[in-house]
View 1 (cartoon, rainbow, N blue to C red):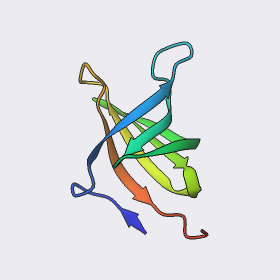
View 2: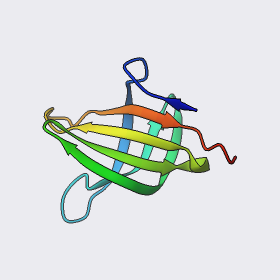
View 3: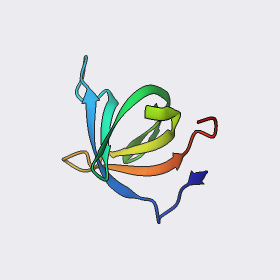
View 4: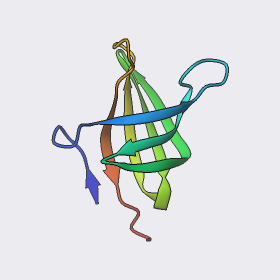
Length: 87
């Protein structure tokens, strides 16, 4: 099951790993009151005003998360979700 599009865009709270720089990559996020751990960052790409991450989280589900780099607070959105069919 893949869910995308404007009907999905949801604000989420994201905790990031901070190594050489702040907010290098997401490690945890909270969605609808539930916390998910990022098991793996599968891909990362840049748009003029944001960074997108394709991540595998708890239970093997895939998410695309967007961080708005154009906003001072670095707001995050959930762009896409795909449920792991094997589970």
